[in-house]
Amino acid sequence: MFTPDRPIYRQIRDVIIERILTLGDGAMLPSVRALAAEAGVNPLTVAKAYQDLQATGLVRARKGVGLFAAEGAMNSLLTQEREQFLTEEWPRVLARINRLGLEAAELLEQA
Image 1: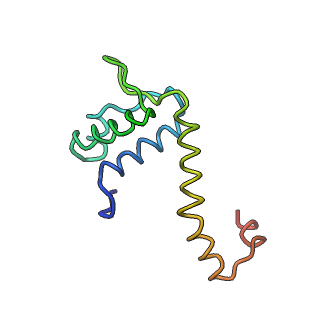
Image 2: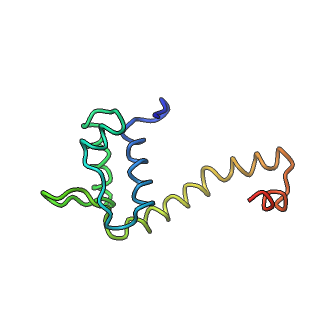
Image 3: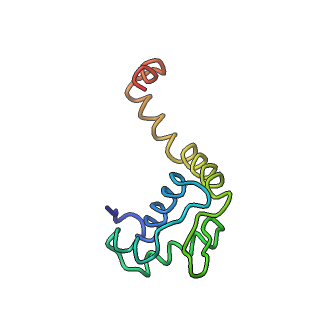
């Protein structure tokens, strides 16, 4: 599940972000223990990922209730994810499209 190129807590953070993008603002997120068991990692690793997301305002903890996606988190994450795609991933994809000699029409037919 995890790759050696990035710290595990960052990869856990990405898992939580995907859940927020899927479930939306205000969604209840898995507890530290539940996510640690699901991912097969130390709970401290999951706690670090949640702390990172809380520090950026994307996750809110309600004492005695649980962890929730903050209001506005989904919009903020979509903006960040789009920017990251356009600046980091798209140039690689575009370069490969050009190397393969693919045309926009061909790609759209396959979509």
